[in-house]
Image (cartoon, rainbow, N blue to C red; front, side, top):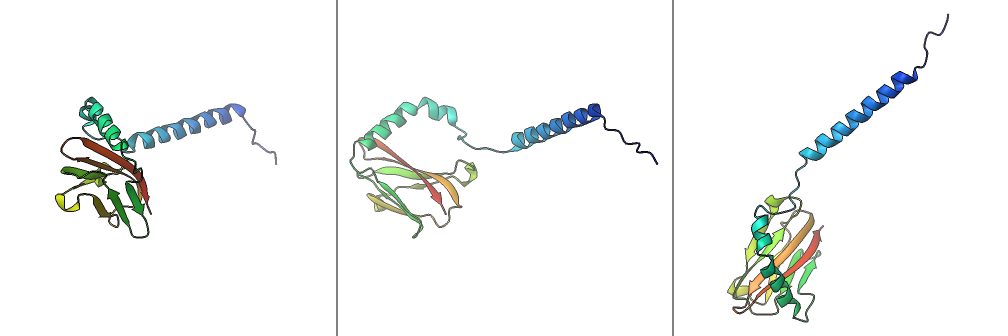
Length: 149
């Protein structure tokens, strides 16, 4: 009995190109269907008013206390020590990977200088905590990144 199988390089090269094209097509489809929420829906309005944000950051940098936000994984809390008395403001929890998890907590007159917030209900992962407040004369902004475990 004779061996009728012969190896053909032409078929192998074409098969390799077809498999590679299928792989690339699959990766393009998966990457284009992945949802990424890196910016807010009002991106352009925030960009126009960014000079005000730069001023808020500079105002907050004038204080010596650089550790105004302290995250404690053991107690699942974040403590924010505002260097000035706040008349109004809010603390925003921003999740870059899913905008549906973003939420804000208003700063009220009851919790003026030390704000303690629970992180027990936050999903595990990367969060950006942003505090914006006003003392009546100037506006301030602090930001800290944290990873909830």
